[in-house]
Image (cartoon, rainbow, N blue to C red; front, side):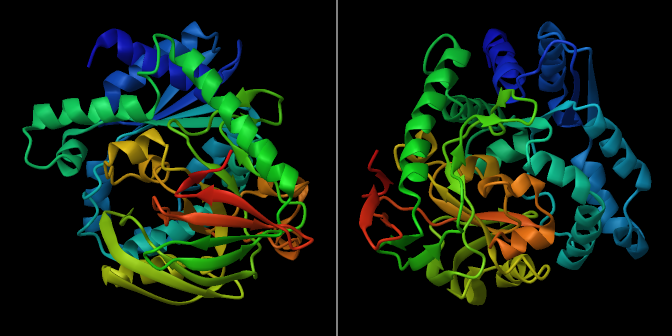
Amino acid sequence: MDKTKLKKFADLLVRVGGNVQKGQPVVISSDISSFEMARLVEDCAYDAGACEALIQWSDERSSHKWFMRADGRMFEEFPDWMVKRAAYNDDRKVAYLHVDSSDPELMKDVSPERQKKYMAVSSAAMTKHREMTMTNAVRWSVIGVPTPPWATKVFPGLSEDAAMAKLWDAIMEASRMNECDDPLEAWARHNANFKKRLEFMNGHDFKALHYKNAIGTDVMVGLPENHIWCGGGELAKDGVLFNPNIPSEEVFSCPMRDNVNGKMVASMPLSYQGKLIEDFEIEFKDGKAVSYKAGKNEEVLRNVIENDEGSCYLGEIALVGVSSPIYKMGVMFYDTLFDENAACHFALGKAYPINVKGGERMSNDELIKAGVNNSLTHVDFMVGTKDMSITGIKKDGTKVPVFVDGDFTV
């Protein structure tokens, strides 16, 4: 990949993603396999005026060995120093920049029970930090960077070098790096398009959306009173606009916790903790997943749905049209950052408090009372297809087409 383009990609994460301000501290999270990109992001952060840019390195292969060989007691606790580090950085209002470069199959031989236990304790320990990010109290953003195992999974049959080059090209296309010479300008236009769709969805103030397509999805999704649709650029509590995900194609809100009825059939496999859940569907009644099945790895789907009290309810409803560059490519990335931006999707688990008016100031009990789900998890799965129809139901019963033939009507 051309070094000049890589520098522009790193700069996109800094200036559009986290929108780093002069004098602001920055924390960059990266696996050691992507050290070159992490250091480019570090340089760009300083160029943008960061007072410091610290890299928190990880090593997923070491993490895999830990999951496989560590004493079982280790999965029942979470290091206090990591909680304190997050709290220290949150208090300083750092910009969190993430370089995502995982191997989608590395954890496939790890015991699901070990992963489930550790996810439960880590999520509980980091609840306050997660709330800071999900309420936009701190700014954060993530990009994807290829690794050989990821590239050869996405493009099997190619040599490692050829697969890496092809995955880089796909990531650049998905991230709108190819639209013009200035990616910052391309993202300014992209955010303007988001604004039109947000005005349409928030202006209608629908009470429900009805989804239907040929593969079997037929579900009515209620929406909470005072719900808010978000997408593209988000306004942080400090008044600074940032883009949490690069790429990003979704307009999203939260469904009414106890008002989802019908069947959802997945239109794409779900890559979760190194395992691929395929050919699955979920039946909902009064908001709760009451039955489900999968052609492959049904036990993993069970762990997702039965993780905690709130994981069997939906926390996110997201609209993505087939005009998305990721959908047009027809590439399965095996990475939620990309795959969720290929099609309409939902998420089981925790909702974003920003999706209901005043939600960022509500307690968990108040959010539940407002119809907003809470959970330790948040797992996206795709349902969108090229024939998807979505009809908005207004409070007076009026029906408004939102999606026709898999895409927005606006």
